[in-house]
Length: 201
Image 1 (tube, one colour):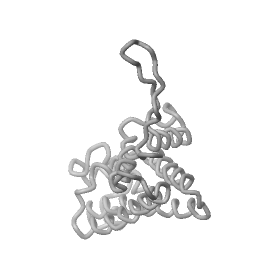
Image 2 (cartoon, rainbow, N blue to C red; image 1 turned 180 degrees about the horizontal axis):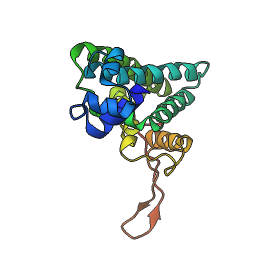
Image 3 (cartoon, rainbow, N blue to C red; image 1 turned 90 degrees about the horizontal axis):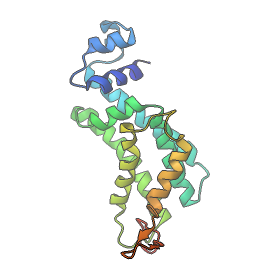
C-alpha cells in the first residue's frame, strides 16, 4: 500500500517536488513510521521501481512457461506488459519519468532488471524472425517498448479498448504496420502492399 500511494504522489508531484510529508499524508503513515520501512526518499523510489520490474518479470516467466510458438510468445509478452501497466498507471509514469534520478547503487540494480527484460523481448523477436533482413533487433526491441510504455500518456482503462484488444491491435501494427489503401493521382484507389517492419515477411 505504501509503494502504491507513494507512486501516486511521485506521479502527481514529480520525485523532486514530492516530500516525505506528502507521502505521509497520502498513506496515513507517520513520517517516523515511513522511515521504519525505508531509509530515504531515494530508497522509496528504488523500491517502487524494483517491485514493478520484479512483478512483471515474475508474471512473464509464469505466462511464458510452456509457450513455444514465437508469435504467441510475443503476444504473451505484450499482453503481460500492457495488463500490468494498465493496472499501475502511476507506477508506469514514475518508471518513465524518474529513471535517471536514482543514485548509482540503486540505479545499477534496476538497470540489471531492465536488461533482463529487454533481452527477453529481444530474444522473442529474434525467434519470431531469425533472418529479418535489414532489421536491427535493438531498434525493433526498443521501438516495441516505446509503443507499450507510451500508453500512460493516453490510455484510459474503462474508456479505451480493453487490454486484450489493445494487445491484438498493437501486435498487428508492430508486425504488419497500417495496411491502408493508396490513392493514385487519377483518383482511383489502388490496393496497398502490406507494410511491415520486417522486409520479405
